[in-house]
Image (cartoon, rainbow, N blue to C red; front, top):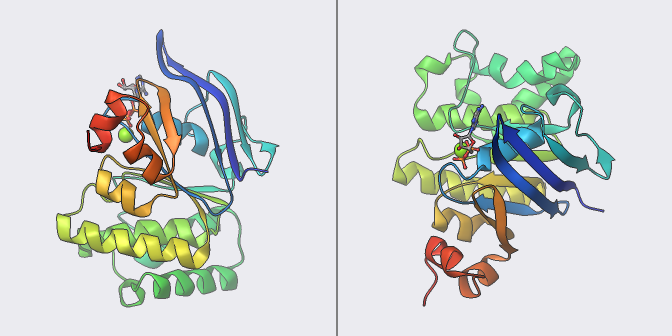
Length: 238
Ligand code: ADP
Ligand code: MG
């Protein structure tokens, strides 16, 4: 059984179809990278999986269970966005614990979760600071910490590193890879950075105009692109 299954999902905004019969099955522990040009529907698909945007038709299943009509809070899914969306008035500790508080996780358990992820992400010394007192990289760690604290079945990352400078991006990429190896989590990760895709992915889905053009291992997508578009996008040798 797939950890996450997207079954024939369509999404319209008004009269514009943005997702066209998207189907994907992601195994438990798989790192799936979703790539495609700006405006092709990547974020819309992520928002649909997270429950932030209702689908027009089709189904979304987690562990074989149909969650299409559940609210975001009822889904065992955590999302990290490009803009970190931290609560400015809350400390780092409060930001990381927030999702747990919403789920009525007892205080002692919340505290333990905060300590665990802060240690993992090396932000233990920043717990009492406010987001404004952090660097961009530190803020992104806090946003990741908030997702990790919940220990969800599925992680969604929507271009999480695109606001960081090149050096930090490489550093965080390595850390995300390590985290994935250590925790064995199921991840769907959007990027428009081909190097990020090639280094992180177990599999890559290439999207264009609301459709999945190709799904395969990095090697398959790079060396055997289905068409010129995928070849061009992945920078494949011709
Ligand atoms: P990507 O993340 O791949 O850049 P998006 O999923 O954000 O693309 O957007 C896909 C398309 O849907 C774009 O044409 C965008 O303008 C449109 N779109 C996204 N969100 C909305 C919305 N809330 N209302 C109307 N159109 C939207
Ligand atoms: Mg987007």
